[in-house]
Image 1 (tube, rainbow, N blue to C red):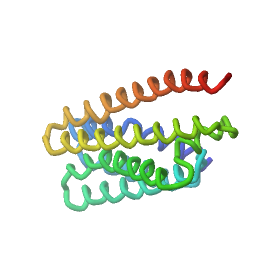
Image 2: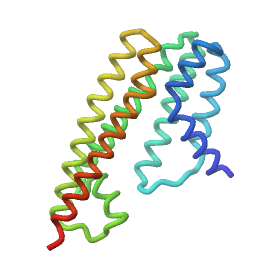
Image 3: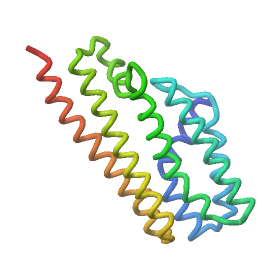
Length: 188
């Protein structure tokens, strides 16, 4: 049951920018803060992840979300809530970047879940994909920061709640197509 609640909270966090927009423009800060505190607290519950770092990252981001929500409530300043998507991009940049310093990058570890006998060319490819994701999270974080500092909640919600997801989906889809082509080159 706890795992299900944690997964539900994770799903709710995908709609975070839209919930913040709706909460700030329609409900008022109190209801939004209460909803976010419960959602982030649920993300601290035990869960499962394909690699341990995802689980740790989820808990770290839940703690950051709780901190930002608490700061918003404590100081009556809703702008603290706008920093969460930036924190997510920076945390993912940190995780993917850190994995490049390890013998096996995060993308390689994920690839080995389905293909344990990854050839050397596949290992090189996964390191390149990890670098591409680092670049994406760097640019995405910069754009998330720009929307915060611009001060327009509608623009912030549009970018962080729609455009960034579309860009991420395009990158995933494009990488999948490239990966299929690269995998064909592995086979004689």
